[in-house]
Image (tube, rainbow, N blue to C red; front, side, top):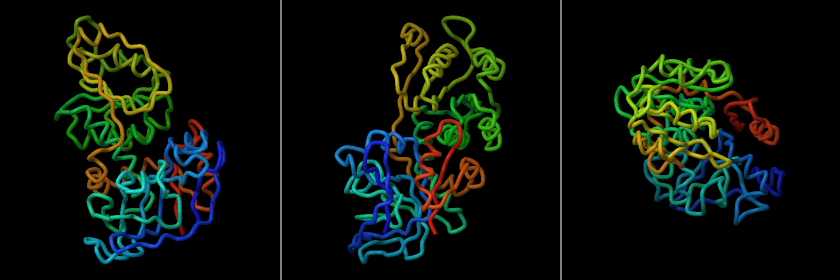
Length: 336
């Protein structure tokens, strides 16, 4: 079979490898779709993930069809459609420095346990939507880390896949009003389509003033703060942190799920005096299959997050497309 592999800095190849042989505790999954993540571009640029630099299999957003079920595995049958937890693999995180990657014809799930390493989904869910399960779990964890309460007023910065997923998560968790901020009009249009209550183009509007219009004024040590309860940075830009803290009222929460590539100076006097909570978010300790139910129930909305689907034999072109800023939202590889 073939697997997309980082073989040198800036280089990926479709390598021929032996198809894995499942044991009695394993399942073998025929890949049907796998999303491309922003981290894939990072792994390619640095030549792979230690200790597998020079030979790092890619792909950690998998969905597929069960091709073989080991005798000791329960709750799944050949032909079932499944989504997979990349972090549960005993040989290392799938597509993130582990021994296997999901941008491959087949994926071996070792020590397979339903609800821990994989979950079965209905057959009517499109494969490209099923492949969103992993990044939507990242978004769900980001929302959960902010501890939203029913009725909370929320703003999500960044209308990429994780930001849109977080918007859906906040709505699912009972947020009363969700605003999405971005610099691209087409992404803001998509945010409205999936259910955002309002959007702000930060290149055209003053974000703080607009939030005050939408959420009212909030109590704070100094005037001019918005009534927003939760700010989620899904963009990873210093301007987002600065804007959120400039707007934040007393007891507001700032969550950070976007990856920052440079340090951001923070005014701690503001954080102290207004008792602002700042919380980070990484991965999905508990959300990988928590999000699956919502994905299945609202798959038509989640489907809007996918901007491009490309066949596996064009995976090199797809990786390049996904790494080009502002051109694509979520790129998903599909398999014959």
